[in-house]
Image 1 (cartoon, rainbow, N blue to C red):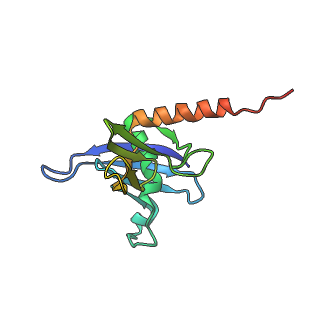
Image 2 (cartoon, rainbow, N blue to C red):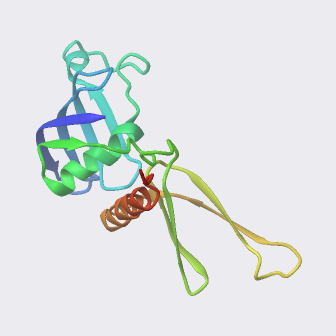
Image 3 (cartoon, helix red, strand yellow):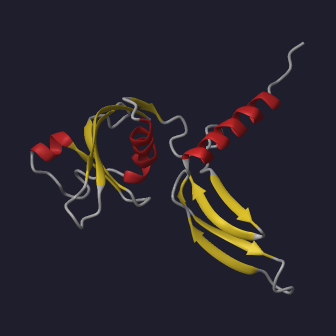
Length: 168
């Protein structure tokens, strides 16, 4: 998905509302049009509306409703980078696998955090205790951090180099 960012602004949302970024962008994908993205600080809190439909006062679900989860990663990158054009190379998945990328951070034998390119539910089985059956913990993923995105991209590039076919 390629988004062309037209305008980004931060809204404080009064003295006690949840602040958010408003992003006007053009989606050049199959359902391309000028859209308004509302991105709150909390992960998985992203709304996307078509501006032309808003101008016609169309706010109905199913008519002017777009999956915020498909746009969220690219919009958060635009906010973080301040760039005017963002290419979402992975569209929320591993570039070659078509599957979400999930990073489970373990420190001292404990799951510290779970992050993914798409919202996913992750179950972790810990067979260290109790001894007869695993302790099963469930986590809802947060978005990948920018540092995790960099490490994932570097690792995927390493894998591509490592598995390049040798000619001759």
